[in-house]
Image (cartoon, rainbow, N blue to C red; front, side, top):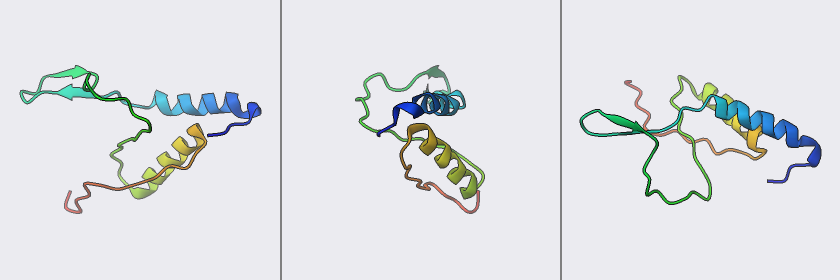
Amino acid sequence: MVVPDGELEAVGRDAHAVIDEAVPPVLVSADGTFAAGGYSWAPPLNGGFTVLELPSREEAIAWAARMAKACRCDQELRGFGFDPQS
């Protein structure tokens, strides 16, 4: 990612706008109890991914565009677990 100096402030604003709407992970046990955070033993990520459950592909594209704006790079959008009966 290469960001011109003049865009750094906008990058920060756009990145924080996405983060402000993020929902943090929780670790859920079989009995239904849960704790904040994910697995403590997870290796660090060299990249990242975001999972969103949205009502339409159009909304997914809009979210991908917001994230692309925030990090100044294209985002790969994949659907998974789609069940037309649900």
